[in-house]
Length: 158
Image (cartoon, rainbow, N blue to C red; front, side, top):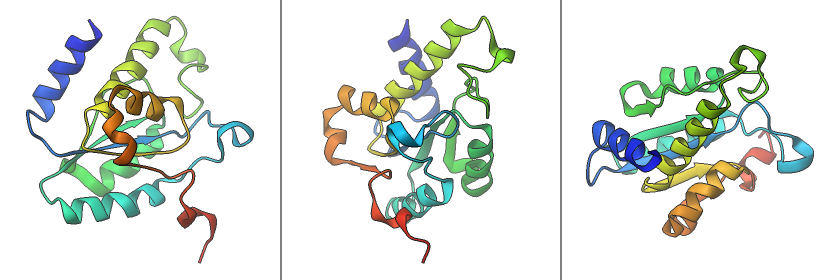
């Protein structure tokens, strides 16, 4: 069921041989004392811009829990950006009471996103199980990914 959904989504949005940059932006439930601070969208954008400059025909697949992050990315990347219609909330979709009773859907969303990220040519991520899960399913991403949690660019403001 899951893999069929992944196959159908990939073929309808990208197709075989597509150059897709995977981006996982965790924005709502990240705890600084566990996985580090939330990495803001502009730090991802720096790397996305470089990738798209080097690969003008590439697309960007975005997996995020944050509606605000999704809006910012759509504003900047428009038709280059693809994102699933997943449950999102600035309060964390897993804890948000407006999504009570949708645990199966929430689990399905995160697994589908992680599996789609695993099919990408390159992955931008922060410290999160979703991005790690994508790499476990496609070990070649280990050398074709950047974990922005640990890149020095966001540690200074100037």
